[in-house]
Length: 115
Image: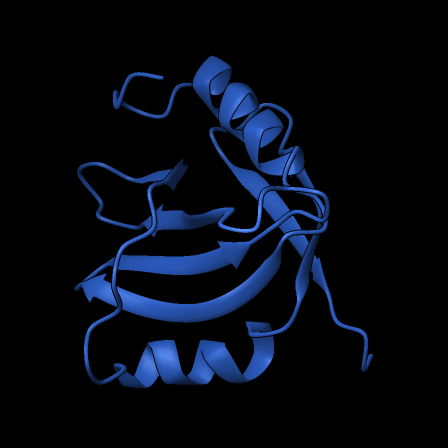
């Protein structure tokens, strides 16, 4: 997939790739840029033992995007935002992803066993 601007068509394609990861567990959350978050995923169930990938969420105004990317090592210390997100997302699984109709946006639902 090209790393171009998030068009409506590209948003639908990316959403499909993320939705195919249903069941993948969030192992960690880190921030590797001022507006870039990475959710380290493991799985989904049935994937190879080393099935690690990152869900990259880049909120840079000039180039916003969401995509699956190769796993990357986390910075040594979490930012306050990454730390707060870890409390809610680590251990959660991707339940579903869907495009927002008429928008260049998508939604991702996570579920936790303890909720």
